[in-house]
Amino acid sequence: MGLDVHARSVVACAIDTVTGELTRSRLTPQHADVLDWLGRLPGPVAVAYEAGPTGFGLARALSAARVRCEVLAPSRLQRPAAERVKTDARDARALTQGRVVRVFAGHARGVGEFPT
Image (cartoon, rainbow, N blue to C red):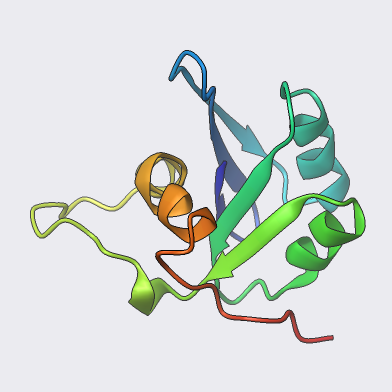
């Protein structure tokens, strides 16, 4: 699943790997809210989000809850040249559909260990 994380909100997007159905939700940035939403999803989940000014607190909370999490360097993510309109929902969906698959398959790299 992909998250677009901001100080005031988190846009979450998950894909059902069997049906291909996308599920989206706007959440508060509270770690408990994100973990609660993840807990309602079927099966094991893996999460990715772009590194940004919100830091690594969410990544540490997800890791502590035994949720696989990758924080990605925005400069390492491929974006289509024609994608001029940037929205939270598009970012979350893009992370879910293509970019996350590349990261978890080992074709792209996260930022490494989360600083403490």
